[in-house]
View (tube, rainbow, N blue to C red):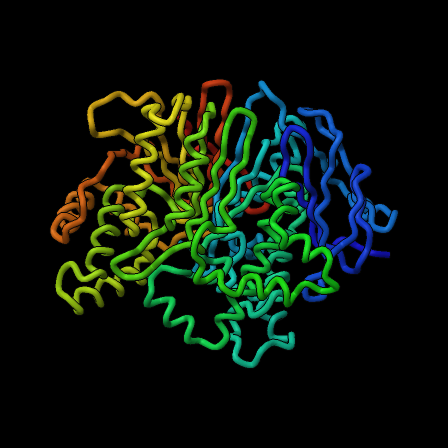
Length: 548
């Protein structure tokens, strides 16, 4: 009898339909609430993405998964609540749970200890704690979306258990032992990350939206041209990139898209029709590391009277010295078009923060100018590149041309120059392994019609080392801001086109955030894991704030 290897995962949901993703061990027919699909194959592994229609909006619809007519989910004897599908409903508050960075380690000491308690400590998994709380609560308490903002797996930091499994596989001779080498390696990593019973249940009943960051491929992916040149010279790296992006397409990206857009793209249809689409999918990813034009990875979601624009801030970068762009021209035109269409609430999501603490922002802007030769010629450029790599300076602040485009877009939207101003503009990000909330102000004296905020939540589970926490904490101080601002001015960095202030001080540790939209109102809250409760993990409020 066929069995489910991974999933089911509830993915795209709107007011009319939902999609369910599943991986099976053999080819079979998958059925959910009357929807049926044959599996398709990539590198000998089998997947299906079903579209379920005809459900009433706003109600919870319990579902089972059948393989070749036999029930495979829920598993026999399961004590978890029923997996359900809830379509979006108009005139109802919307809860979006978000965060990023979740490394896979056992849920016990020493891995569940804080990083300052043990070198292997990654803290308690905040997303698992959230899942356990949801499972114990009334079904209506679950959110409308789980937005995972990057680093769902750590392809360059596999767990000890996964490393043992990889060592036993037949892998390319030049593949580093601590790197994922092919699509099947990646499938093992996703399976390990999402097979915990609490996480598996959560993903089966809360609609999941995702975007990648560097660790799905490799730490510091596309941080600079020097980094690209070094990595592209490695014989194994091209295979690694193509395998990582193919796995991202299968395990994450296709579930972000409405069914008609997915099928209109052509690639999905070809994959479904192929006997084994491994080579086809790998070839389709071959140029992604050097792509031009509109990124295939950015997408937009309509959430009732809110719009979520999810921006690929990794694969589409131009890292040519002196001409760096986080988002290229054609891609930016698409983003601006989506962000300026009428909506009650505009949500902009990026795996890396749009706005850092001012001290960190000016430091990255200074470093970009230094690496481009603004001071000290070759020596300064070398020093700037070294600092960029050591401090991982690869956020929007490190791409000043794109940052100024973002500031112009926010200014236009907030002041109603592109139509009616939204009730709120909220930017959502992760990556930096701490949480904070920033309020944006504009410099030309006119009163903005929309409040503009950035909420950063990271990590679900990835503890900062003590020295890293001290560096970030210093970056949030007024002294760091003054020093870094002077350095940036000294290298000719243009003045800031807007202002912002961090209104909720950084919260360190593993945490999960919720954005609630209710009519014209918006509010955010961040909850952090309570220390010392690894057997019975709990969350406590770190901060909450009304945004309108």
